[in-house]
Image (cartoon, rainbow, N blue to C red):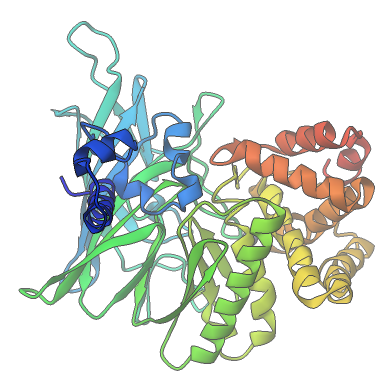
Length: 503
Ligand SMILES: [Zn+2]
């Protein structure tokens, strides 16, 4: 089996051989290689090779460090009319328990598509599909083994179709998270996704329109997506192969990576430009004619990736893609992938800097360190809002950062609070309306983190953030995780601040 591992040994072998041949050496090459520990006598193929390609060298062992993870292999093809994705998926689930639940994200009102799972097998046996949560999820019962115990592994095979003729939410002119919008096809969560589990319960929340949609635990992913040849795909993870299928003028994009919280793909007639930052390749994808803004997006994305790597801890992935998308003036975060609204590439470029810094910050607070976005949306949103303070301070200097703090968070919050719009930050997403969500989950939460920093001082605040990141990579945290970490690292009592701001 060909793999990077064998390939690397081969190159090493050739180079050491030529070294040996050029000098008068009495040893045979193979003796020397074994003695140097360069090759093991019986090399074993790396079962995680495909996923590891998406990790930076220093993060190569992150997969093993987490213990057994679910492994997805999704294969999907767009039909000729372009309105249906036909797919099959295999998910290998360690220690599955008596039942497994998959979410069908496209069936949520937020996405407005329609997914149907047409068949399901577990360990080779057909199983029933029980719809849950208004058909936005399905439950499968895991068949017991011959001795009536639960299997140690469940291999789930599903067949599914996704209708991409999305029925947009309340305001159809506004923005598109899922499906087609002009020449761009957005596919977050298009495959049946294992539901997250908290305190033994499957999380099947149907979030309001103003909240984030995906809430997943990390997994290992391979996705093979076949699309018309002219479409360029930007995706989480890395593209291991792009295969031309001349018989029907399509291309198959083989995407791989993990541990990832999602694999999201977006396809369109994109052009791109790349740079290296913090050990990763950052690529900015933009629509034809938007190169100037595409270059500006690349510069901000690379600079914020460097800055957050320095102040929080290393970015684990080999790539970060930042893509112009039909989100109006909004942005959206996925694992290893950031979307920036197309309006900012044309008319309102003054907001690009902030939005890119915000969305790139989500690679630390959403993608690597996860939290329940339905229950505690302020936790990641507040951190990435306030992370932009560090970005502005690092890139434009202290006065620009202070201006951001005052203009973006303090003044809007003071005005609103003066008008009676205030309240607790730590509430579920559905306890807010779009206005209070923006004001409290974003602005007031950023001001809370500013208050924490003012109490702890710059140096200790940074130690808190580094510890919080290092200890919770690939996990799901709660507000209590943050507060307990901050108190432990600083030795200070943060209860009064938490009472004042969060409750
Ligand atoms: Zn955000």
